[in-house]
Structure formats: structure tokens, C-alpha cells
Image 1 (tube, helix red, strand yellow):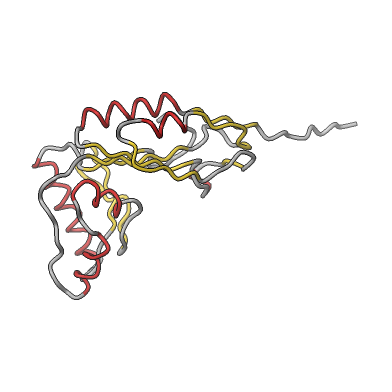
Image 2 (cartoon, rainbow, N blue to C red):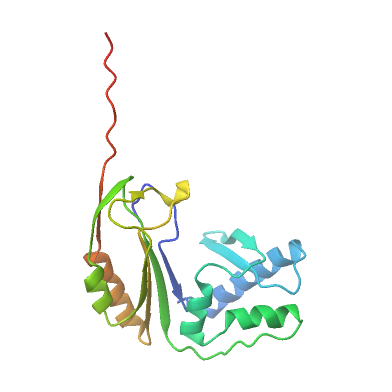
Length: 192
């Protein structure tokens, strides 16, 4: 995304992949779970699609990040209940019908510094797909990069039944948001 950082800026469900690509990702995920001998647990698996196929970036026996909310909105899946069912062990409830598209976005400052202004929040709240926003920083807070363990300035969840409308709202949000930080002052050392 052009940032001097590394983080998952945007996640969307359902993914817009062809069935054979989804199946290939599923096979790679299953092999990774089997290699770790995980049983009766949910797994959070992050995959990256490369020219050579799918690669596992992260795998852990846990429910991952925003997935509970994303799966509830997009499919009506109760991720927490399924976590319990899997541990019993019973079959999880996985509706096949899609209710719509969910996007989670995390916004970080482009540079380290103290947050001096945050513009566009009221515009974000007015987009058709708006579901919720969680402000994690306030004016005056220090902003650092995800790679250094810092939180985003805010998390945003959008939902819409129509893919083209949610994509349009993503662009509106990206245009509306302006995060300004003041650069930390460095002390000049004067040599005599």
C-alpha cells in the first residue's frame, strides 16, 4: 500500500477467487494443520498466493482477528459456537449461502509521530456500507508502525450485500481519511 510498514490493511469476505484456487488453498491449509497434528480446534491460517502456489504465512490454534465478525456478517456463521462444537467434537454449523460482503480496514499513520488531526470520520459514518468504527488513538497520542507493535489509528468494518457498492465505499473511505502526525523533534548535537 506504499507505507513504510507491514500490516494487513484490508480483509474481505467472501474472497473473489475461482473454485479451483480456493480448493488449492484449502489443500495447503489442511497439510499445514496435519503437519502440526492439530485436532479439535479452530485454526487461524494466513495464506499468501504466489506464482508458485499458496504459501502459509501463519498458523495458530485460535480464532483469528476479525474473523468472528466477518463470518457473522458475510455468512451468518457463529464462529464462537463453532469453536465449542469442534472441541466437543461435533460438526460445526457452516451455512453455504452468502449474506453479503464484509471488509475490515485498519488505518495507520504513514509516518511515526504524534497524532495532530484525524479527518474523514464523519464522512465514513455516512457511507452506505458502514457497520462500525473503533478509534484506537486520540489527538496527542503517539503513532508508530504495526511492525513495531503499535495499534492502528482506527479499525473500520463495512458490510454490503452488493460487491460493487462495498468496493465504491472502500474508495470513498480511502479518499476521506487524512491522518496527520507531527514529526518528533530531534535534538541537534553541537560539537565544539
